[in-house]
Length: 266
Image (cartoon, rainbow, N blue to C red; front, side, top):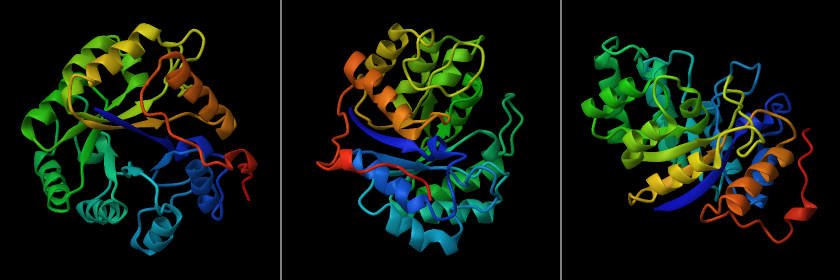
């Protein structure tokens, strides 16, 4: 197993502006991270993945590991095809939730024709489609129907589920997990705290996750998906926990001059 790490643009919400994207990417790159793109900025409906934005996306993320969080506004097949082409251009995988593929959390309620068409478009373009953690039975049903589907295991969601244990999520999904959303909470709300908060998920769960993943020969992207305090604070706290406390492998290496670079939104 090889781990690589990105930081979700969720960490910049409320601080992003139309002009700040390049600075955010430069900042993450200086810390040794790639970027997980969200389809919009907070409070803005303009989709980043629209064809008119491709040149800017490619230039800003040049040399970076990129993953993409799918549109979650009920994308049509045409919109799915556009974001898949965008992912192909950026060399990115796409993380999608059940609803964006017209699948309900309830088993048996789905537009399988729509889902199959999206899966086929992704396969034709060589884009890895990762289904984000939701109802465990629903995830497994989709995986049975589509061999090319992989999983994004969201640690916060799995920790909160009262029907299935965290270990069950790892046991059932790890073999096809190629993306992680690394987030923590206090057991009541999925509030996207940095990994390792005091009173959050047990160290045993983090160990179980890593041990489960290492059983399989997957290239896994770990995405720090944290809700905003200061981005530097969230990234520093998340890194300290995963790499210094839990000893996860392959910590990103900062650039030599990273201490001279600061994130100051325009």
